[in-house]
Length: 285
Image (cartoon, rainbow, N blue to C red; front, side, top):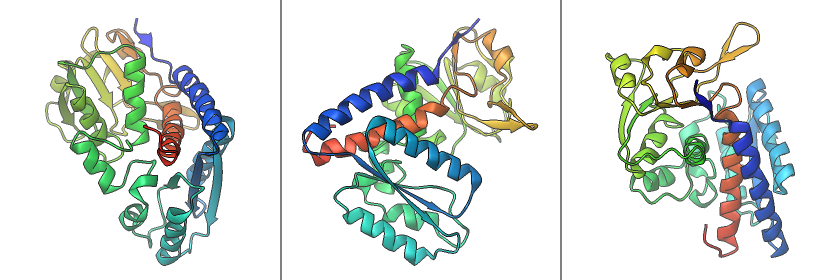
């Protein structure tokens, strides 16, 4: 049976260190600050924002939330972002997605200062990742890399298959694995020979957003499986993109859903905010 890679435990350990480092920085007169902007009343977004606020409080990070009405104009939102860019108390700016349809997400994300882009979505930070010299790395894929590191998974020379090609997870995690000298194949829902590709992988990172699309018997004996997917099936059940029970028969290690990658995303947001504050203090990140 596969070893379970416990995202909750890894996240808790990291958050303890983040809180300790934050207190040390506060002692030097610098309080890390995160601004979260929420436009509209999307229920899932409200839950995420609430979780981020609680995590900031627990870590000692100053957080401020800007709740805007759904009818807020793009110009008003861009003005707020510009003000936050200039606010010396703020080290990180997070605009919660999705935004209302009348607002251009790309325009808003590009308006955030790259030096405060703790989500790692600004084209400047994406470009830095592509060239192998990252500043801020996207929180979910960065969390995946920390989990692999914590589990002692050596990526050098390994065959990594990423299933999913989103800008938020699939593409950046593939680049991060390349930076660790893995041989990386990016697949997606339209890949013709997906089963064969997955079966050849030493490490499978599933981020396609389809419940149990990757069957357990596709997994090579001894492979490591990181399941980023969170899919609601029925009223209450959450499942990943991988058939978990069957995959446990073949995998050496696997992340559960829930309790796997999920807790790492907010943890890496705190990590990036602290990193930004350290840079403001003139310290190396």
